[in-house]
Length: 94
Image (cartoon, rainbow, N blue to C red):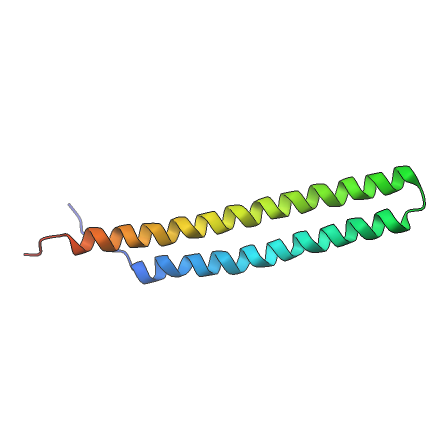
């Protein structure tokens, strides 16, 4: 069987990269919330106000969901790195 090698430090670092990206996307969700509030306040028409709020709300939820997914994927990378480390530590070397 061919040897399988993995750099667990790089794998674990993926969590930080994912967290950084998730934070940026989460910030964009906040911007969409603020944009929706601005549209609602400035529309001057109930229909336009509701449409703007719905549009911004949909994007806010979408972006927040993607940020959450990225955070969880980063957690999985860190857990995988730890599992590989534990497996490697328990191996009998010849």
